[in-house]
Image (cartoon, rainbow, N blue to C red):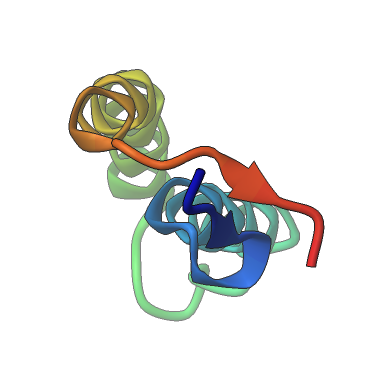
Length: 68
């Protein structure tokens, strides 16, 4: 069976980028760009979009992941 390497998985890449954005926001990276209310709104939107993105990506996935 054909597999997809972990580093090429759209689901994994999506989640890694999302975690990086959330961690950067938590440590105040966006504090010079966004006011606190907007930053909270962005965090809430991310919390809603992440599960939907994962569901969508898993729905279109046809190949299992390989360990390489």
